[in-house]
Image (tube, rainbow, N blue to C red; front, side):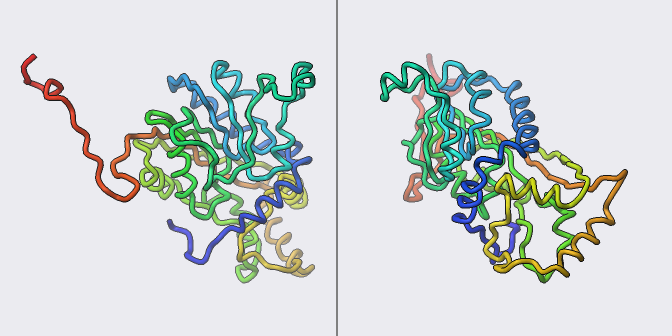
Length: 301
């Protein structure tokens, strides 16, 4: 990966932030909704009839209804590590579920789980959907390997994440010596390499810039806070930012104002790839596939 060796994300802080702001995240989810819409457009061109769909990093479950509507015959499973957010993803209880507590009521199955240790058997899913979750990992390889493990051969992962130019205006406004006030993000090409290492084939990747605008810096900071997207880098400053530093940040950001608005850039990386047959066993031995002689061209029929 192109990230510095000393960069690490505090996963407990990520869970704490998203749990703490689970009640407010949907009110500031414009970026997530736009990205989900663009992901869904990509599914329009892919022929897939999944039996099970896993939304990993589902948050409050904003994508679940759309997935269920697109794949009505599929079992929808949602997983997130922030329990408070997952709790809000519960569907309204039907009369049947109130009478019979063991009834699923047709809603998605919800699981509190870590992306690196999914509680699902191998080859259980046909489609894994992940909207803006991988950017909360300092190295996505372990998470991608888990996605590949739970996918059946021929199954697909569809994901979005954030690239290095995300929040570049805010990052450049903080003094360099002030630590990682803004996360670092992984380059699209490194993600493509990680997909191959994880067991996916022929990944399709593209990138789009989305710019949100604000009347003032406080509006941006409020959205980041209420969405739970505060910096969780282990190298972030432990104390509060001083008044003089904030004044400097505001002055620097103000120089970027255009047409009365302040920009906030998000580099959104989209990708999908298919699970391919394993080339090696778990202990590193090569997998050799044998075909009957009749399968070879020119063999007698």
